[in-house]
Image (cartoon, rainbow, N blue to C red; front, side, top):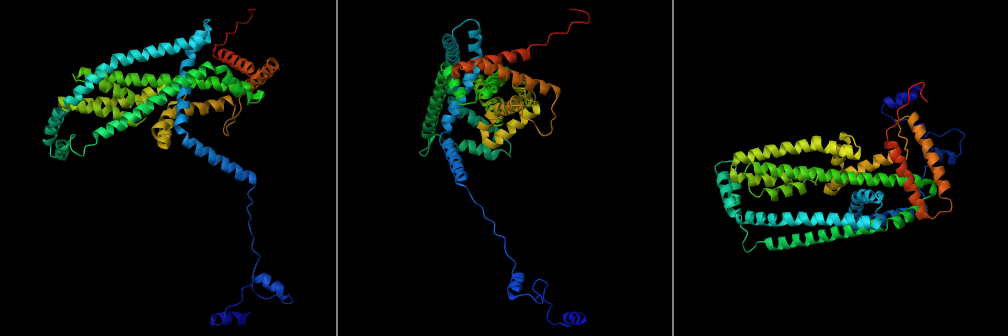
Length: 434
């Protein structure tokens, strides 16, 4: 030991590592095995079923991307069905045939749409033409006001240099492009309306086909999910119409009170833009402020402050309360869902965020999903017992029945149970009363 330490200190050759030192009496093969330990080889075997599943998933994603417009048409049609179905059921409850009820509801909606278009479009076209006619004078006056402030002089110079009739102008091509887009959008919208009409007419067969591919032990839950989805869609549409109407009415009253022209056009723009999450606020505020600049910077400042205040009031108070009550979502969930949907998918994600969030919470509740941090309560046990009894009753009533009739029975049982759950409980009689 002392000689080895001395050799290392004196600069001699280092000691042989323990793993490489020869063991007395060992064979050469074992010495080589010690110097070169065996390596562990990890093999990954991919089964043909896994490869086939991956290919099918990729093909489904590709098909979904390619058929995105058709998928959006289907979503819009389902929204229309969810909006119209309560009115149709109300008429059916009053001894009206379903076909006649559907025709009457769609007739009333068509008449309302025609009246709105007839009463607003001529005025809108007149006001839009007046805005275009007075645009050069308005732009010149705005540039003159901006040139008085040194900071805004570059903007004033840019407004003076804008030309619409130059040789390189692309207004005609842009207008043609937008007209083609509007025509395509109108065609998709009309297709969605007709698809919704056919879905409501063929409701029994479509529902029977869906129930035919689902095991009968899940029919009761499926019927409850379908009824709740219809309620969510109708509540979302009513909430969206309410907020858009309030935004348009507020803008119209504000501009009229300040004596601004073309208030109806700007109010309609604000009402339509209110559908868009986040971006809609700017689309609604900017035209109002630009129109108010013709009356002076003071009026424009008043419009800007009041519109921003109303936008904040709508986003912080109205939207959580309206959608929270109709969709049974907490206010924090409403705001969080809007932010997540707008971040992930933009405008489309923002539009679908609230019904998707309400659907997820509804599925967790209806499918009795056990969350990790939640303990089962006595009420949960009672609900599970009621579910089992309802499924047994459904199995008894639908034995030997076709899928169409079975679907109708499931929906009837689920609707009756929902009415019982919403009905207030009868007060208990006092002690001693029979």
